[in-house]
Image (cartoon, rainbow, N blue to C red; front, side, top):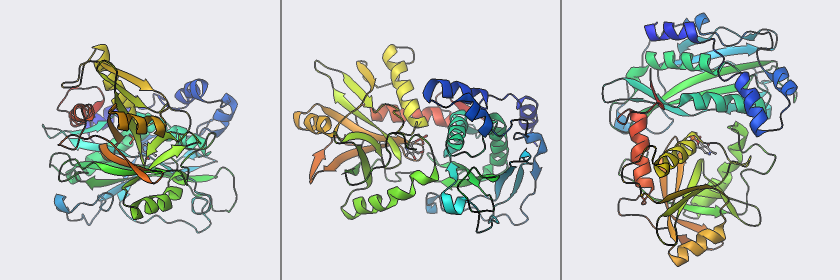
Length: 420
Ligand SMILES: Cc1ncc(COP(=O)(O)O)c(C=O)c1O
């Protein structure tokens, strides 16, 4: 066990994200009663996740490391995984790091019937000095707890889970490809494993974390994508679950994605309501930039209205653009005159701006691709054209991307990036 890990063990019972943070979050964001929260929380007197109880079983058959050039997103997994069981009677059990392999589960398990599953996605990188880094993982731990709470799965101490995830990554860090832009994708997942069919909070659950080495999202440079402005299907609705990272939000998007692909578009642009408000792009948040009258740009992203997933990349783009605009932390190359807005945007506004030359660019933002520029939107039978530069990027996204990647990989110092 590394000394950093033992140090962390001594401090990891600081319950930063649970349940105090959830109480604060609930006060600020949602009408969740505190009683409801505490009755759903895992450790109302029960055991929380405890890194000091970690048991490690190393694989006897380490796999051959794949060629980085052959990596396909989400197809290759490392030698080990982390599992932590939970029961209603005792709370969180002993965490285990064990060889990556199948999970044993009864066919009656509630996850298989009622989609009791939530997940997260984050990345670990090697920095120029060869150290392993993660980018704002505390945000993923917070979001995972709000997702768990939303579908009555047990919540947990995010600091403790993060310490265990770090230990798993340290064990398999030789799997992180060393080529620039490559990383280790980290997938924490929590499922309801009650062995009885019934729509209710499960009396058993399993949290597991698997790791997957990934290559460049755009191996041949930035390739702008075409979006299908989807009016036939909805991804999320008011009062629904769009703002949470639940498995149940993704399966219904697969058929619309297939339809978009059949029509020659890479992703769905999810539109909402009769006004056709832009919400998200496939599984990314979205930004649109307009030229302002008299010069400068407005960078717009739809507000977190309960339908949109609060992306960590979205928050990072907003924060660094705001810090730049205020002069607190200028981003090299980013235009000085920049207004940042979280406000609704409709397809008519985007179409009009495209026709009048006011549209500067439109891009998706998420952990997998980081920034995904868009060059056209199929909308009600015609294509709305979006300007893109020769390098595939736009006047804002080019510099935002460079700053984000710099901070993620440790080339640009930032307290968002933590060394394991
Ligand atoms: C629906 C959806 N929106 C947005 C995002 C982007 O979130 P993040 O930046 O945290 O990866 C994701 C990916 O996680 C997603 O699945």
